[in-house]
Amino acid sequence: MARIYIGMGSNLAAPEEQLRSAIEALAQLPASQLLSVSGFYQSDSLLPGQPRYTNAVAALDSDLQPLVLLDALQAIENQQGRERNERWGPRTLDLDILLFGDRLIDEPRLKVPHYHMQARPFVLYPLAELAPAELQLADGRTLQELLAACPFVGLERLP
Image (cartoon, rainbow, N blue to C red; front, side):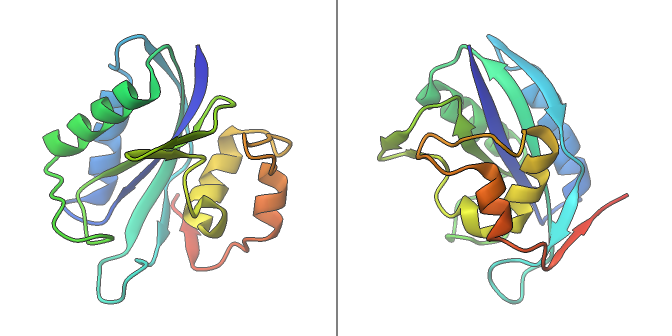
């Protein structure tokens, strides 16, 4: 069983409700147990002119293999109206595998630790609510190091 951290984001169709629905779906994944979910955060889109994103991170333990989990997450996205029309475009739901136990994964469809997570406060700060600061990623970096290099800028924790 692996401890897995899933990044969640939405900026369309009632983003907070999209995340709540995704949390319910994550709790129903086979061979998995949803452990906890961070608070919700809002941040500006990476591209100008898009609505603000609502983000969170979920922690789960799972016996699913990485690509099987990826397929299940994409099925949840699709059920919630995700359309893949443009890279980094607005979306009803985005579910990303951030960390998969202590595994380093480099597949055409899946890179873990998630690429660019080190530069995204909307990923690191919710993750820090769930994971210990001394958490070491499979590539040798610690969460504490990533947080120190990524200021809490442009991010708002929702009540």
